[in-house]
Length: 132
Image 1 (cartoon, helix red, strand yellow):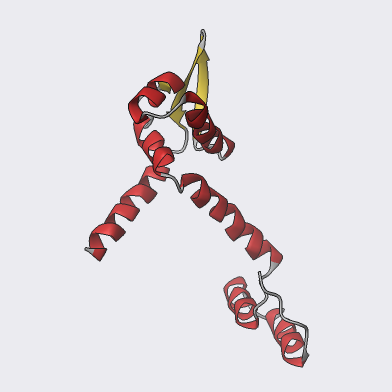
Image 2 (cartoon, rainbow, N blue to C red):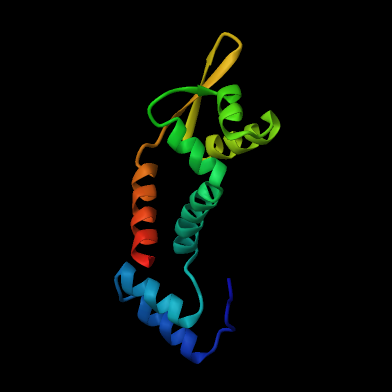
């Protein structure tokens, strides 16, 4: 995040921002090259979700566990990667609460916790098709 030095114009913008609504504040901060910490945090949290989804294996996992519970072993066999790599992908998705694990005897079965993630996938498909 680039922060510009404070000068008279920047201070003027800060004074003006106090009189404006949140959307206008955001635009003014961005124009000044300075992002409000609350706005930065909001978009940083969203960016973390996108990063969690930014791998083909994790996208496959999301689709695979959409309508059924699958174990690490089942996912590993389907994708064709080793268990430790699959576990790392699952950990990333669990960390962001996109999937949930449920223990049954010696196995953990994963399912999609946030189905609206699939809405994003549909949107991404529309974007891809529009490019063609």
